[in-house]
Every structure is written in C-alpha cells, then in structure tokens.
Length: 187
Image (tube, rainbow, N blue to C red):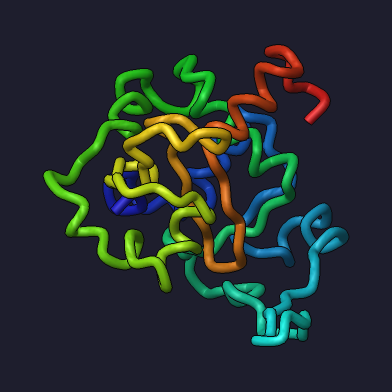
C-alpha cells in the first residue's frame, strides 16, 4: 500500500527517508547485502530445543528477499531498533504524529476474549512477554496489559514480540530512557 500511494517508491526507500534517516538508523535494511554494518554484525539464527539447548536454524526472514516484506523483513542492530522505540515513547512527533502514537496505546477491543492466544496460559506467555495478568487488550502498536502487576509492570504497558524473539516492552524502554536522561546519542 505504501508503495502504491507514494508513486511506486520501494518500501525500503520510503522507510529510509521517513524513518531510518530522521532517527539516525544506519544499521537497518531489508537486505543485508545492501548494508555493510548489518553484514558485519549479523548473528546466526538459532532455535531452542525442548531441553533448552540452542541449535542452528534457518534465518527468517530470508537474507535477501525479492520484495521489501513490511510484515517481517527488516534486519536491524539493537542500537537502531531501540531508536524506534524511544521515538515512540518520547512522542515528540519525530516518527509519527503525537495523536497517532497516543492511539497506538489505546485499547481497541471490546473484550479480551478476542485474544485467546494471548490469555491462554499454555500458549500466551510468548505474546505477553511472560507477564502474568488477567486483563489484556490490543492497541495498534501491540498487546496492552490492562492492570497493574505488582513488581512487574503497570496498566497500559505495551509489549510485542517478533518471530526471532525480539521482544520489546514499553515500560522497560521508558525506564531506560528516563533513568539515563533524555540524551540518546550514546545508544
């Protein structure tokens, strides 16, 4: 959709102009072959066996896809990945309009019954980043915990996990950001 609406510009080029460059992200792209920084620091993909051992696994997404896969195709360094999260939590309009970010954190479902995979104790731990709560909802940015969990997180904490276990939790990033001050140049 982004490619069509913007005159055929490739998704990666659009992201570069509107996300990566404004945030100073130099180690993020859809293809490692096009970014030396990614190639030099790319970690091997592993999977955990039922006994807890890590074994080699096929990478996901494919290393150099034909198309820019917006639903799960970026390669990024942690220092770049966290810049997106910080931009969302600072909500200064650098990445998205303030009202858009606010909307990302608003509950969108009338009932948590629509999140059976999330609330299911056997399957949901991955989606919930291990947070044991009874009240969940979904915001446009991820899963929302809708109650305080003493010693863990507060109501409104958002989390999301990518396929290779790239979990982020809004509260943790918030604490990192404001515990060290507003200057993120060192990240």
